[in-house]
Image (cartoon, rainbow, N blue to C red; front, side, top):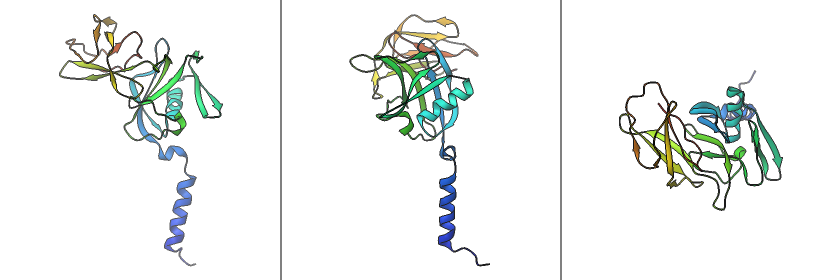
Length: 202
């Protein structure tokens, strides 16, 4: 029996690749879901494998036993409810990838390794959605909080409250360091009125 030619082998490889499920091309990403009144999944940003932003919330729903609903429209599928809350004329579910709101639907955003996906409930105003907060470790024992607008640009948020476990700090602003001292095992995060609560870090 004759051996397949190089061209035939290449065609066979391409056929196999196209037959592989979409998850074979998925990326390793972080995902978090912030609800209307509380965090619904992954305050510390859970690692999942997902090919797009819609797939990321599917993975969150599996791991967190979290209900969500997809509606089909002329613009494609969109998430119209997560948990108990659905959208309305001036509020609903949106997402960011690496702190930026993409200009396309969640199923059209191709993820790459290391991306961070945030799904959140938002009330919309004349200038768009609320800023989203992100907390990072800074110098030893210190943290910084940054607020991002829809374009991923830093925004100033006042009335920022730091949370360490069940304790709260006096209100401050984004862009300043917060150094709470020893807090072994307790998570640190930030909230502010009119902004989406931050991730939690150790």
